[in-house]
Image (cartoon, rainbow, N blue to C red):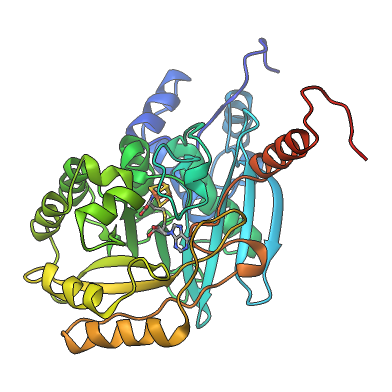
Length: 376
Ligand code: SAH
Ligand code: SF4
Protein backbone atom coordinates (compact mmCIF):
# COMPACT_ATOMS: atom_id res chain seq x y z
CA UNK A 1 0.00 0.00 0.00
CA UNK A 2 1.25 3.48 -0.75
CA UNK A 3 2.51 5.16 2.39
CA UNK A 4 2.15 8.76 1.32
CA UNK A 5 -0.32 10.89 -0.54
CA UNK A 6 1.91 12.19 -3.32
CA UNK A 7 0.18 11.58 -6.66
CA UNK A 8 1.64 8.73 -8.67
CA UNK A 9 3.64 9.92 -11.64
CA UNK A 10 2.68 8.97 -15.15
CA UNK A 11 5.17 7.06 -17.26
CA UNK A 12 3.76 8.27 -20.57
CA UNK A 13 5.84 11.09 -22.02
CA UNK A 14 9.14 10.02 -20.45
CA UNK A 15 11.87 9.34 -22.96
CA UNK A 16 13.83 6.08 -22.70
CA UNK A 17 16.51 7.57 -20.43
CA UNK A 18 13.99 9.14 -18.10
CA UNK A 19 12.04 5.90 -17.92
CA UNK A 20 15.23 4.00 -17.06
CA UNK A 21 16.00 6.53 -14.31
CA UNK A 22 12.46 6.36 -12.91
CA UNK A 23 12.81 2.58 -12.64
CA UNK A 24 16.29 2.78 -11.13
CA UNK A 25 14.89 5.08 -8.46
CA UNK A 26 12.63 2.26 -7.31
CA UNK A 27 15.53 -0.23 -7.48
CA UNK A 28 14.77 -1.81 -10.86
CA UNK A 29 17.23 -2.70 -13.61
CA UNK A 30 17.46 -0.80 -16.93
CA UNK A 31 16.09 -3.71 -19.02
CA UNK A 32 12.72 -3.15 -17.37
CA UNK A 33 12.46 0.12 -19.28
CA UNK A 34 12.53 -1.80 -22.55
CA UNK A 35 9.83 -4.15 -21.29
CA UNK A 36 7.60 -1.32 -20.14
CA UNK A 37 8.14 0.61 -23.33
CA UNK A 38 6.83 -2.34 -25.30
CA UNK A 39 3.75 -2.67 -23.09
CA UNK A 40 2.95 1.03 -23.08
CA UNK A 41 3.66 2.03 -26.67
CA UNK A 42 3.38 -1.19 -28.64
CA UNK A 43 0.60 -2.96 -26.75
CA UNK A 44 -1.12 0.20 -25.52
CA UNK A 45 -1.59 -1.39 -22.11
CA UNK A 46 -2.50 0.89 -19.22
CA UNK A 47 -2.92 -1.73 -16.50
CA UNK A 48 0.27 -3.06 -14.93
CA UNK A 49 -1.51 -6.26 -13.87
CA UNK A 50 -2.13 -7.13 -17.55
CA UNK A 51 1.59 -6.87 -18.40
CA UNK A 52 2.07 -10.62 -18.40
CA UNK A 53 5.81 -10.71 -19.01
CA UNK A 54 6.34 -8.89 -15.72
CA UNK A 55 6.15 -10.95 -12.50
CA UNK A 56 3.21 -10.21 -10.20
CA UNK A 57 5.24 -8.67 -7.33
CA UNK A 58 6.85 -6.21 -9.71
CA UNK A 59 3.48 -5.41 -11.30
CA UNK A 60 2.27 -4.47 -7.83
CA UNK A 61 5.37 -2.40 -7.10
CA UNK A 62 4.99 -0.49 -10.36
CA UNK A 63 1.34 0.21 -9.61
CA UNK A 64 2.35 1.52 -6.21
CA UNK A 65 4.59 4.18 -7.73
CA UNK A 66 3.31 4.89 -11.21
CA UNK A 67 0.42 5.06 -13.58
CA UNK A 68 0.36 4.72 -17.38
CA UNK A 69 -1.72 7.84 -17.80
CA UNK A 70 -4.08 9.09 -20.46
CA UNK A 71 -5.51 12.59 -20.77
CA UNK A 72 -9.15 12.81 -19.70
CA UNK A 73 -11.76 12.86 -22.45
CA UNK A 74 -14.37 15.63 -22.29
CA UNK A 75 -16.07 14.78 -25.56
CA UNK A 76 -15.71 12.62 -28.66
CA UNK A 77 -17.54 13.52 -31.86
CA UNK A 78 -17.68 11.82 -35.25
CA UNK A 79 -18.65 13.92 -38.25
CA UNK A 80 -20.91 12.88 -41.13
CA UNK A 81 -17.81 12.43 -43.30
CA UNK A 82 -16.30 10.18 -40.55
CA UNK A 83 -13.68 12.63 -39.30
CA UNK A 84 -13.42 12.25 -35.54
CA UNK A 85 -12.56 14.83 -32.92
CA UNK A 86 -11.55 14.38 -29.30
CA UNK A 87 -11.75 17.18 -26.78
CA UNK A 88 -9.20 16.28 -24.15
CA UNK A 89 -9.14 17.53 -20.61
CA UNK A 90 -5.78 17.63 -18.88
CA UNK A 91 -5.05 17.38 -15.16
CA UNK A 92 -5.24 21.15 -14.62
CA UNK A 93 -8.66 21.36 -16.32
CA UNK A 94 -7.36 22.88 -19.57
CA UNK A 95 -8.60 21.44 -22.83
CA UNK A 96 -7.23 20.86 -26.33
CA UNK A 97 -8.45 19.10 -29.45
CA UNK A 98 -7.16 16.23 -31.57
CA UNK A 99 -8.68 15.39 -34.96
CA UNK A 100 -8.57 12.29 -37.15
CA UNK A 101 -8.96 12.92 -40.86
CA UNK A 102 -9.66 9.65 -42.70
CA UNK A 103 -8.51 9.12 -46.25
CA UNK A 104 -9.15 5.84 -48.11
CA UNK A 105 -9.38 3.71 -44.97
CA UNK A 106 -6.26 5.30 -43.47
CA UNK A 107 -5.62 8.83 -42.49
CA UNK A 108 -3.86 11.55 -40.59
CA UNK A 109 -4.09 12.31 -36.93
CA UNK A 110 -3.82 16.04 -36.33
CA UNK A 111 -2.19 16.82 -32.96
CA UNK A 112 -2.26 20.03 -30.95
CA UNK A 113 0.94 21.46 -29.49
CA UNK A 114 -0.40 24.25 -27.28
CA UNK A 115 -3.58 25.34 -25.57
CA UNK A 116 -4.43 28.38 -27.66
CA UNK A 117 -1.68 30.18 -29.57
CA UNK A 118 0.44 33.27 -28.87
CA UNK A 119 0.27 34.25 -32.50
CA UNK A 120 -2.73 36.10 -33.78
CA UNK A 121 -3.13 35.17 -37.44
CA UNK A 122 -6.31 37.00 -38.36
CA UNK A 123 -7.96 34.11 -40.26
CA UNK A 124 -7.43 31.53 -37.52
CA UNK A 125 -9.90 30.75 -34.79
CA UNK A 126 -7.21 29.37 -32.48
CA UNK A 127 -5.44 32.72 -32.85
CA UNK A 128 -8.33 34.49 -31.13
CA UNK A 129 -7.76 32.38 -28.04
CA UNK A 130 -4.84 33.64 -26.02
CA UNK A 131 -2.15 31.11 -25.16
CA UNK A 132 -2.95 29.34 -21.97
CA UNK A 133 0.12 27.15 -21.92
CA UNK A 134 2.34 24.73 -23.81
CA UNK A 135 1.34 21.08 -23.83
CA UNK A 136 3.81 18.70 -22.20
CA UNK A 137 5.38 15.80 -24.11
CA UNK A 138 3.05 13.48 -22.18
CA UNK A 139 0.02 15.47 -23.31
CA UNK A 140 1.15 15.44 -26.94
CA UNK A 141 1.84 11.69 -26.94
CA UNK A 142 -1.36 11.22 -24.91
CA UNK A 143 -3.38 12.49 -27.89
CA UNK A 144 -2.33 9.59 -30.09
CA UNK A 145 -2.88 7.14 -27.22
CA UNK A 146 -6.46 8.35 -26.75
CA UNK A 147 -7.13 8.18 -30.51
CA UNK A 148 -5.77 4.64 -30.71
CA UNK A 149 -7.82 3.63 -27.65
CA UNK A 150 -10.90 5.07 -29.32
CA UNK A 151 -10.50 2.87 -32.39
CA UNK A 152 -9.07 -0.07 -30.42
CA UNK A 153 -5.96 0.08 -32.58
CA UNK A 154 -3.57 -1.87 -30.35
CA UNK A 155 -1.11 -3.48 -30.52
CA UNK A 156 0.60 -0.95 -32.79
CA UNK A 157 0.00 -2.49 -36.23
CA UNK A 158 2.93 -2.93 -38.59
CA UNK A 159 0.84 -2.19 -41.69
CA UNK A 160 -2.65 -1.06 -42.68
CA UNK A 161 -2.66 1.45 -39.89
CA UNK A 162 -5.60 3.71 -39.42
CA UNK A 163 -3.29 6.47 -38.19
CA UNK A 164 -0.79 6.17 -41.00
CA UNK A 165 0.28 9.80 -40.72
CA UNK A 166 0.76 12.39 -38.02
CA UNK A 167 0.39 16.10 -38.69
CA UNK A 168 1.30 18.75 -36.13
CA UNK A 169 -1.45 21.06 -37.37
CA UNK A 170 -3.86 21.32 -34.47
CA UNK A 171 -3.99 24.12 -31.95
CA UNK A 172 -0.81 26.07 -31.37
CA UNK A 173 2.51 26.81 -33.00
CA UNK A 174 4.61 23.66 -32.58
CA UNK A 175 7.93 25.45 -32.95
CA UNK A 176 7.11 27.72 -30.01
CA UNK A 177 6.92 24.57 -27.89
CA UNK A 178 9.90 22.97 -29.54
CA UNK A 179 11.36 20.90 -26.70
CA UNK A 180 8.13 19.16 -25.78
CA UNK A 181 7.12 18.63 -29.41
CA UNK A 182 10.55 17.18 -30.25
CA UNK A 183 10.46 14.86 -27.25
CA UNK A 184 6.94 13.67 -28.11
CA UNK A 185 7.79 13.09 -31.77
CA UNK A 186 10.85 11.05 -30.82
CA UNK A 187 8.62 8.83 -28.66
CA UNK A 188 6.13 8.51 -31.53
CA UNK A 189 8.92 7.63 -34.00
CA UNK A 190 10.57 5.02 -31.74
CA UNK A 191 10.71 1.74 -33.67
CA UNK A 192 9.82 -0.42 -30.66
CA UNK A 193 6.62 1.42 -29.86
CA UNK A 194 4.19 3.51 -31.88
CA UNK A 195 6.79 3.48 -34.63
CA UNK A 196 5.52 6.08 -37.08
CA UNK A 197 8.36 7.02 -39.40
CA UNK A 198 9.57 10.60 -39.82
CA UNK A 199 8.51 10.34 -43.45
CA UNK A 200 4.92 10.09 -42.28
CA UNK A 201 5.08 12.99 -39.85
CA UNK A 202 4.55 16.58 -40.96
CA UNK A 203 5.13 19.61 -38.79
CA UNK A 204 3.31 22.76 -39.83
CA UNK A 205 4.72 26.12 -38.81
CA UNK A 206 3.78 29.72 -39.32
CA UNK A 207 7.50 30.33 -39.92
CA UNK A 208 9.65 30.39 -36.78
CA UNK A 209 12.83 30.57 -38.87
CA UNK A 210 15.60 29.68 -36.34
CA UNK A 211 13.72 26.60 -35.18
CA UNK A 212 12.99 25.37 -38.70
CA UNK A 213 16.71 24.63 -38.98
CA UNK A 214 16.79 22.86 -35.62
CA UNK A 215 13.72 20.82 -36.52
CA UNK A 216 15.34 19.68 -39.76
CA UNK A 217 18.59 18.71 -38.08
CA UNK A 218 17.12 17.02 -34.96
CA UNK A 219 13.92 15.43 -36.20
CA UNK A 220 14.02 15.32 -40.00
CA UNK A 221 10.24 15.28 -40.26
CA UNK A 222 8.37 16.70 -43.26
CA UNK A 223 7.93 20.43 -43.17
CA UNK A 224 4.81 22.42 -44.00
CA UNK A 225 4.90 26.19 -44.07
CA UNK A 226 1.80 28.31 -43.62
CA UNK A 227 2.62 30.80 -46.35
CA UNK A 228 -0.73 32.41 -47.18
CA UNK A 229 0.65 35.57 -48.82
CA UNK A 230 3.15 36.51 -51.51
CA UNK A 231 4.12 39.95 -50.15
CA UNK A 232 5.49 41.01 -46.78
CA UNK A 233 2.92 43.77 -46.72
CA UNK A 234 -0.03 41.33 -46.77
CA UNK A 235 1.68 38.66 -44.69
CA UNK A 236 2.49 41.21 -41.96
CA UNK A 237 -1.19 42.05 -41.89
CA UNK A 238 -2.60 38.53 -41.68
CA UNK A 239 0.30 36.73 -39.95
CA UNK A 240 2.05 39.01 -37.47
CA UNK A 241 5.03 36.62 -37.13
CA UNK A 242 6.10 37.82 -40.57
CA UNK A 243 7.27 41.09 -39.00
CA UNK A 244 9.89 39.13 -37.12
CA UNK A 245 10.76 36.58 -39.83
CA UNK A 246 9.90 38.05 -43.23
CA UNK A 247 9.40 36.08 -46.42
CA UNK A 248 12.98 36.30 -47.64
CA UNK A 249 14.35 34.70 -44.45
CA UNK A 250 11.57 32.14 -44.37
CA UNK A 251 12.21 31.01 -47.93
CA UNK A 252 15.96 30.84 -47.24
CA UNK A 253 15.31 28.47 -44.31
CA UNK A 254 13.16 26.35 -46.64
CA UNK A 255 15.88 26.24 -49.26
CA UNK A 256 18.28 24.98 -46.61
CA UNK A 257 15.91 22.46 -45.00
CA UNK A 258 17.82 19.19 -44.84
CA UNK A 259 16.44 16.09 -46.47
CA UNK A 260 14.12 17.88 -48.84
CA UNK A 261 14.35 16.73 -52.42
CA UNK A 262 11.98 16.08 -55.27
CA UNK A 263 10.71 12.93 -53.63
CA UNK A 264 10.27 14.71 -50.31
CA UNK A 265 9.01 18.21 -50.88
CA UNK A 266 8.21 21.06 -48.54
CA UNK A 267 4.49 21.74 -48.44
CA UNK A 268 3.40 25.34 -48.72
CA UNK A 269 -0.03 25.75 -47.23
CA UNK A 270 -2.08 28.56 -48.65
CA UNK A 271 -5.43 29.51 -47.15
CA UNK A 272 -7.66 30.97 -49.86
CA UNK A 273 -9.17 34.28 -48.73
CA UNK A 274 -11.68 35.91 -51.04
CA UNK A 275 -10.42 39.12 -52.64
CA UNK A 276 -7.32 39.12 -50.42
CA UNK A 277 -4.81 36.60 -51.79
CA UNK A 278 -6.71 34.71 -54.52
CA UNK A 279 -5.83 36.54 -57.76
CA UNK A 280 -4.06 34.98 -60.77
CA UNK A 281 -1.16 37.39 -60.14
CA UNK A 282 -0.81 35.96 -56.61
CA UNK A 283 -0.68 32.43 -58.06
CA UNK A 284 2.00 33.41 -60.59
CA UNK A 285 4.05 35.08 -57.86
CA UNK A 286 3.85 31.95 -55.71
CA UNK A 287 5.38 29.90 -58.50
CA UNK A 288 8.16 32.45 -58.89
CA UNK A 289 8.90 32.69 -55.15
CA UNK A 290 9.53 29.02 -54.53
CA UNK A 291 11.90 28.54 -57.46
CA UNK A 292 14.75 26.28 -56.39
CA UNK A 293 12.84 24.77 -53.46
CA UNK A 294 11.50 21.21 -53.80
CA UNK A 295 7.96 22.39 -53.18
CA UNK A 296 4.33 21.41 -53.40
CA UNK A 297 1.29 23.44 -52.48
CA UNK A 298 -1.82 22.72 -50.49
CA UNK A 299 -4.67 25.12 -51.12
CA UNK A 300 -6.97 25.35 -48.12
CA UNK A 301 -10.40 26.88 -48.76
CA UNK A 302 -10.95 29.30 -45.88
CA UNK A 303 -13.04 27.70 -43.14
CA UNK A 304 -15.30 30.32 -41.74
CA UNK A 305 -15.90 30.62 -38.02
CA UNK A 306 -18.31 32.87 -36.14
CA UNK A 307 -17.01 36.44 -36.22
CA UNK A 308 -14.36 35.87 -38.93
CA UNK A 309 -13.66 38.86 -41.17
CA UNK A 310 -12.88 36.77 -44.29
CA UNK A 311 -14.79 34.73 -46.81
CA UNK A 312 -13.87 31.76 -48.95
CA UNK A 313 -13.51 32.38 -52.71
CA UNK A 314 -15.87 30.48 -55.03
CA UNK A 315 -14.82 27.09 -56.40
CA UNK A 316 -13.99 28.46 -59.87
CA UNK A 317 -11.56 31.02 -58.44
CA UNK A 318 -9.78 28.37 -56.38
CA UNK A 319 -9.61 26.03 -59.41
CA UNK A 320 -8.16 28.79 -61.59
CA UNK A 321 -5.56 29.50 -58.89
CA UNK A 322 -4.63 25.83 -58.66
CA UNK A 323 -4.30 25.53 -62.44
CA UNK A 324 -1.83 28.42 -62.67
CA UNK A 325 0.38 26.73 -60.06
CA UNK A 326 0.10 23.38 -61.87
CA UNK A 327 1.05 25.03 -65.13
CA UNK A 328 4.07 26.46 -63.31
CA UNK A 329 5.19 22.90 -62.55
CA UNK A 330 3.97 22.34 -58.99
CA UNK A 331 1.19 20.24 -57.58
CA UNK A 332 -1.50 22.29 -55.82
CA UNK A 333 -4.38 20.11 -54.65
CA UNK A 334 -7.36 21.83 -53.09
CA UNK A 335 -7.86 20.43 -49.62
CA UNK A 336 -11.28 18.94 -49.14
CA UNK A 337 -12.60 20.29 -45.88
CA UNK A 338 -13.37 17.46 -43.48
CA UNK A 339 -15.33 17.50 -40.27
CA UNK A 340 -16.89 20.89 -40.89
CA UNK A 341 -20.06 19.89 -39.06
CA UNK A 342 -18.13 19.24 -35.86
CA UNK A 343 -15.86 22.30 -36.25
CA UNK A 344 -12.86 20.07 -36.79
CA UNK A 345 -11.54 21.70 -39.96
CA UNK A 346 -8.27 23.62 -40.12
CA UNK A 347 -8.23 26.77 -38.10
CA UNK A 348 -11.50 26.01 -36.33
CA UNK A 349 -10.10 24.37 -33.25
CA UNK A 350 -10.71 26.08 -30.03
CA UNK A 351 -11.47 24.58 -26.68
CA UNK A 352 -15.10 24.25 -25.76
CA UNK A 353 -14.46 25.94 -22.45
CA UNK A 354 -13.20 28.94 -24.38
CA UNK A 355 -16.33 28.94 -26.58
CA UNK A 356 -18.47 28.92 -23.47
CA UNK A 357 -16.45 31.65 -21.78
CA UNK A 358 -16.80 33.86 -24.84
CA UNK A 359 -20.51 33.30 -25.22
CA UNK A 360 -21.07 34.05 -21.53
CA UNK A 361 -19.01 37.23 -21.92
CA UNK A 362 -20.93 38.19 -25.04
CA UNK A 363 -24.28 37.63 -23.34
CA UNK A 364 -23.17 39.75 -20.40
CA UNK A 365 -21.90 42.52 -22.65
CA UNK A 366 -25.07 42.53 -24.73
CA UNK A 367 -27.07 42.84 -21.57
CA UNK A 368 -24.75 45.65 -20.41
CA UNK A 369 -24.12 43.74 -17.21
CA UNK A 370 -21.14 43.39 -14.96
CA UNK A 371 -22.54 40.81 -12.59
CA UNK A 372 -24.32 37.49 -12.96
CA UNK A 373 -27.77 38.93 -13.53
CA UNK A 374 -29.57 36.77 -16.10
CA UNK A 375 -31.23 38.58 -19.00
CA UNK A 376 -34.31 36.74 -20.16
N1 SAH B 1 0.44 26.99 -36.02
C1 SAH B 1 0.76 26.15 -37.09
C2 SAH B 1 -0.04 24.88 -37.16
C3 SAH B 1 -1.54 24.96 -36.87
S1 SAH B 1 -2.58 25.70 -38.05
C4 SAH B 1 0.67 26.90 -38.40
O1 SAH B 1 0.18 28.01 -38.39
O2 SAH B 1 1.14 26.37 -39.39
C5 SAH B 1 -2.81 24.52 -39.35
C6 SAH B 1 -3.13 25.17 -40.71
O3 SAH B 1 -4.48 25.68 -40.76
C7 SAH B 1 -2.24 26.37 -41.01
O4 SAH B 1 -1.79 26.34 -42.34
C8 SAH B 1 -3.19 27.51 -40.81
O5 SAH B 1 -2.75 28.66 -41.46
C9 SAH B 1 -4.47 26.96 -41.36
N2 SAH B 1 -5.66 27.71 -40.96
C10 SAH B 1 -5.84 28.46 -39.86
N3 SAH B 1 -7.09 29.00 -39.84
C11 SAH B 1 -7.71 28.56 -40.96
C12 SAH B 1 -9.04 28.73 -41.48
N4 SAH B 1 -9.94 29.44 -40.83
N5 SAH B 1 -9.34 28.13 -42.65
C13 SAH B 1 -8.43 27.36 -43.28
N6 SAH B 1 -7.19 27.15 -42.83
C14 SAH B 1 -6.82 27.74 -41.68
FE1 SF4 C 1 -1.37 30.04 -34.29
FE2 SF4 C 1 -1.11 28.64 -36.59
FE3 SF4 C 1 -3.47 29.76 -35.91
FE4 SF4 C 1 -1.44 31.32 -36.65
S1 SF4 C 1 -2.48 29.78 -37.93
S2 SF4 C 1 -2.81 31.68 -34.88
S3 SF4 C 1 0.30 30.22 -35.79
S4 SF4 C 1 -2.42 28.13 -34.81
